[in-house]
Length: 243
Image (cartoon, rainbow, N blue to C red; front, top):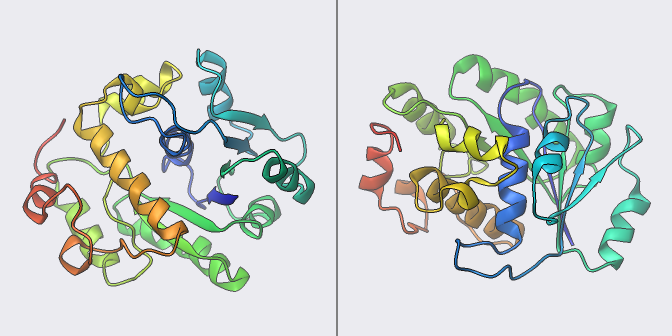
């Protein structure tokens, strides 16, 4: 079983929305005509803001598995139980900040995903989580999230992060479809499967999956060994259009 923790010191960076979307994609959902390939995916939440709780409460489907932790620390026995039940992926949605609660989850992770909005203030705030991951010795990736289409700041942030082999492409843009889907208890690929928003999230899951399994799909597309369905030209154009 692979455990993925979403963590960030700064609130409002989109951890919860990414948790929901990645968990649905990890279940094998590929579109409205596809069948779910794998129900063995779980979401654990430590977040007192209860965003993912509300998403689950309005969701009509009973997958991924959802577990609300009644303790601040993630019990090792809980992860063992999930592994014994055959779970392949467990996603942990953590509260904002770097606390003992977040550290306990990071220590159990195979990968820490750190969403960051494309501004220097947000990048600086992410360094605390990066330092914690380094200190613990867990693999981590930075994901640009909630970027504004049509602005240069997202491109500049991506170019800044591309110097690190811990930057995970592609960036995820702030799109109406993401918020609309989440409010209905859906992942974006379930709500608007043929949108640019769905394509971005699907590509992000491919990159997370590859990282978890030791494949290299990292960094700026120009420096990556993997081009994926997006060409470099398409990636550049994604900074100048909405969808």
